[in-house]
Length: 326
Length: 259
Image (tube, each protein chain N blue to C red):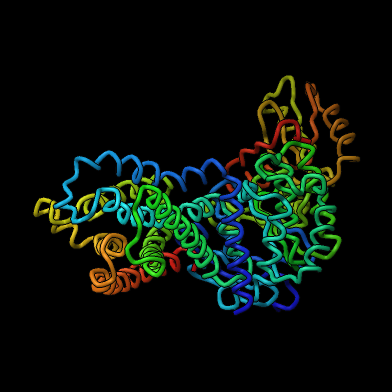
């Protein structure tokens, strides 16, 4: 069982000063996937991450990394993982290269090997020119790249990234995503925490939505969105009397691709399987009903935010850096 | 074992680099006790102090031991500050996610603080020397002063690190630090001998380990071996008990914080 999964977490719980930060949390991360822990600040995702990187002991439950218990075999786990901390966790007085040299010593990487790894990592994250500058002068994106280089130095099997693009500008964000995808192609299993919906949506193979210490939903972004019951078609009528809405609902219910119909203000919210056939048919149907005049038709794919709302009852206030909303 | 030595040295090297990049702070850290206490205080009270009460040739030579131990006190109590910042910004977490021995971080801090303290003691004695204070017990005496200073420093650094791991915010840390340091100095024989204090202060100073340390360092500077040896012996007993207590408390705080 544990041999097939990279990470197994079962019934994990953590209590801080009588507050349950994580409650009965279970999840499995497969080899080679990018797994996201999505939730608002204080949801328990960082606590979960800290338990997995062995810096925090759980109150209840167990977690294994490649079959090794994070508490009983913490030292073995530490040799298998890399950790990319939030950007504040940089020593402002050390240069980028000195950070890497320090960690090379802490991982006991032989000197020659360390130098060649450091050279290639600096190249990978494109920090060669700034490697000998003190980190105080680095931009947020540069610090994050240095973080990633530090996390990759021990050649980890599993890489943990804590809020990898928090506070970064659009370009740096895209660069970091690109780096993370490249790492996945090299066979590294990746776990990230994020409170950005678009990051979870575009980067992660699977996500767990965490709220108030509990997993509310888990799966691929695509499946999670599909589980909401298909794409949404919103009709707005210019004269939405109850009779007309009733007639329309009855007529639409007969169509094969319609999965659900809910009333909304001045119109209907229709969940459909595929938009290609659905849209023309819906328009035809509205034309067959006397007095039914269409004021607007809006089609939208379910967003991860809809999933979040559906499972937690509230919206994840998504505040990505300006203009990254796609 | 070799691996841990490599870890401790690499981490100590980081502290040294940090200090060397904060030149301003380094200068003030090193220079503050000599300028403020030894030179200003020493000269200020040169005439006001009663040599009969001091049992010393002059106030400067009396004060030298006090300044040496005050420096140990300040360095020791400040010894946890960098770890506090490491804890707050997440660098400590990053270190703890690597397969290092948990104690390596602590040991590196001890090593660094002791090295800095040792150097400062030597500088203070050199400045005192320029003002005519020549240690009666010579180089061997200076070695003993360093040894006693460091023994005291170990316990203080342990207290400071325990606080760094325990406090919720660095505001708390600095409040406690400010609250501890001045009374420790005034309620000791650093500035005046116990005999010159009011009774209640004498009583408090008697239980201050700093008094015992100063009373061992002072005869090494102004008297000679015959007077110093029994005091040094007493100081060693006090310090071993003090260090044991501080290290025990520190280890508990550390275990609770990082597991």
